[in-house]
Length: 205
Image (cartoon, rainbow, N blue to C red; front, side, top):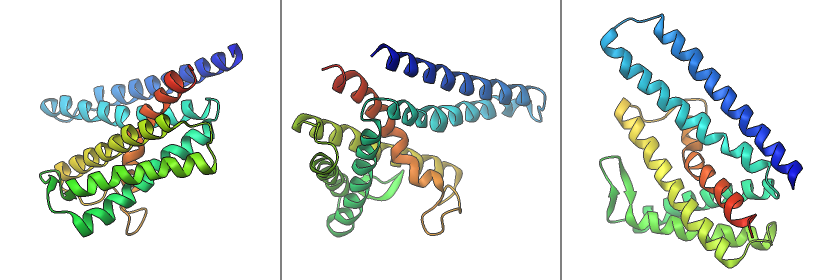
């Protein structure tokens, strides 16, 4: 137990080190390459958002991997997100009538969001019977509803960013599927919650 705790602590130190070093390096670059002083604060704010949005949130996958059953937790989270996304799409396409948040994502519906959560629950049940039998019924429901909801919020947040910049996709590296960020938006919000649930609730029993 102590050895695992030390390894986890070392991982956290490395993550904080690289995030801090990267931020300071970019901050120095901004400081000595000022083009418009009135826009500098906006540019720095975007920089801070970039460091908090992708590296900080995504780093929880590393922490999650270092936990007991770490690989299973990661696959569980991916299954929750993917089954939720798929269910939300098909339920929303066939039954969606009430707009969920039209100013951010005009195509998403309340029915689709509910269908997505149901799909996430199914995903956790599949995980329990196939590769993660240690999960209880409470674990299945809690992780599905919390991580499934956060995954949908992450998708909406990325839509907010894209709409504010006037773009449809976050990149072109994956033709027909948007950019890498379009594939990770749900994971970014679900990963921290999954880690803290696994670490503070599941392993503390």
